[in-house]
Image (cartoon, rainbow, N blue to C red; front, side, top):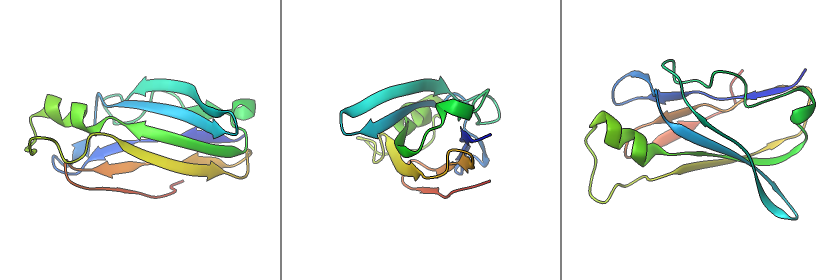
Length: 117
């Protein structure tokens, strides 16, 4: 059964990014469709996979992480205005039976992602 999951690590603090809002949208010929809006838990993860089973269909998706709002709540050093406000990650699901894990490692000034397992 396929699934889509994510987690966020605050690499300034060296811990999971708890309380970060994330939106998931599906992109298609008709535009964007909001699929889900979630907030990370104490482990920097969502309480359940973003999509599972038949809900995970092949196509293009975008996760948008609200990093400015998160770092404002943590008090981490940042510039004014913030350098990063939102981090969008656009990716394609080709095999709806596979596990797609899209993590974010983030600071107020940089980020990294990869396809995890």
